[in-house]
Image (tube, rainbow, N blue to C red; front, top):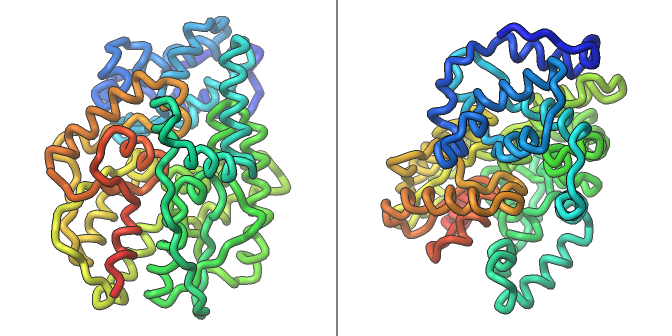
Length: 407
């Protein structure tokens, strides 16, 4: 696709990157077949091809409107279109560029600004954990829409105390420890059973995705730099050989630190190295099956697995969790229909666009429920919380099930 950048974007980094991405696009429309919002809304401008067209027009000098902004806002950034695209269009980075430009040009109303500020500052604040505990203590009287964002309180279990020669870093920050405090200790216990010690860098926090995808890209990059500073001594000294992500939304962001900080002279090389060392937990545990097989006593019964978009489309990792758990003796299946589609969580999307998010959630739960599982498993805290809000079937992180089966 030929693009004629307006003078405003000629010679800029975002203009050059967008132009390179657009050059790959042949406007074939294969992406519309797998776009969740296009399937629900049926509007070409609510599919990847239409959004690409809107971004192209803005780059060529057309002034965006609130309608332009709305169509870009409605994108889940699930990146399913990237898995479908025969030309390899890097849609995820293109829509980030488009949203940032439109955000500068189209002012939002006060209520929208307030909500977005609350999300980007509140979810990344040290006060989020005590606020979540308070919400859990009064969960029964909360309004339904708020209650579904406050999971029931659960115990975390103990952190292993043994030391091992091999050590890996685990991101402790973000909303996960407050919302589901058992996931990180369960991860550490499973790795400990395989002879790996999990290390936490206390100064690391949110991966930066929340702010970045709410168009505070500078704030998101600052959080990325803070994490790099926290992790770098462990990496530089050779103490750890891997940075493990058990939240796939964080994983896809950290793996892209090198790209997101490529123009930062002080951090570009460190960011590239951090991205290279980052692995999803499923990749790590897959290699540990021989060490774990005799230590896991898998209970009978079927588990349904929802692969998060950030894992299967963002990180391009498909089938790893199901294969690993099957190798450990569990019966795990994905939905027979639309296992590739987003559940509607998508970070803060389910708060900003609840109607679309609930439609996608209920559609997903219908397919998963058809398997009649004893529990639904996933690999991202957002998906887990969102799906649990629509079903009485337990929804858990898959590593919790492996941990519970350790002999």
